[in-house]
Image 1: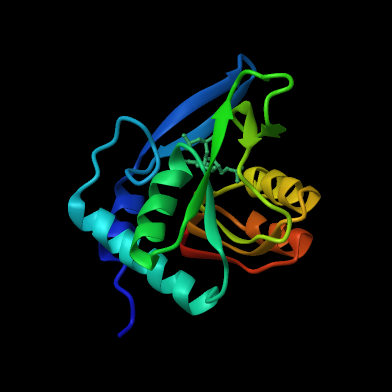
Image 2: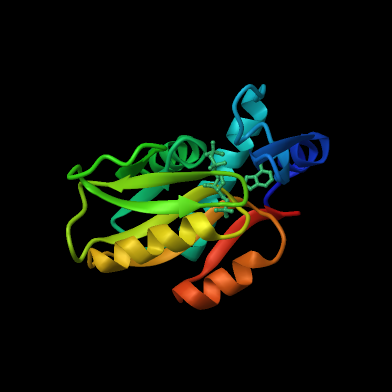
Length: 186
Ligand SMILES: O=P(O)(O)OC[C@H]1O[C@H](OP(=O)(O)OP(=O)(O)O)[C@H](O)[C@@H]1O
Ligand SMILES: Nc1ncnc2[nH]cnc12
């Protein structure tokens, strides 16, 4: 049976736009997608639809990996639901605006509207992982996570997202050398 994206499509269509400022000169138009952003209401039907579709897409595209890796806070809620549905373990990447020196492995991430550090722990060289996030926009988040996984000797089998914004995912896919898949695109 072909997947239904009715609730997801509606939530994307209806998402409110807010303007956020990285600094006083740089404004960014940001969408309050209910599946990704704080302060939004998410209906159980949408949770179910996204979770089922993520799990089905991963099963079809990426049948063989050890565990799911997702950054908090937008990615790991969905990583966790997909992991539960697929009965796979997961590793949650923690984020902070603070750089904790001598504390775990970190990479600096800069997107169109924010800057912070992503912390890595609990990985072993040779692990085969699937990266799952809610939104791919500039691709900076996935790109820097993939680079750090590679440094640690982790094999990335692919990337699964809920939503791709624009066409940046194509360059991302070419750069990281694994399939980048998503349920919907704006
Ligand atoms: O492709 P990119 O330009 O890197 O954007 C994608 C990232 O942006 C969002 O994270 P954000 O920092 O907004 O935190 P969030 O998880 O609270 O949404 C989203 O969860 C992705 O991780
Ligand atoms: N919710 C969002 N709206 C617009 N761009 C984004 N990039 C990452 N998350 C986004």
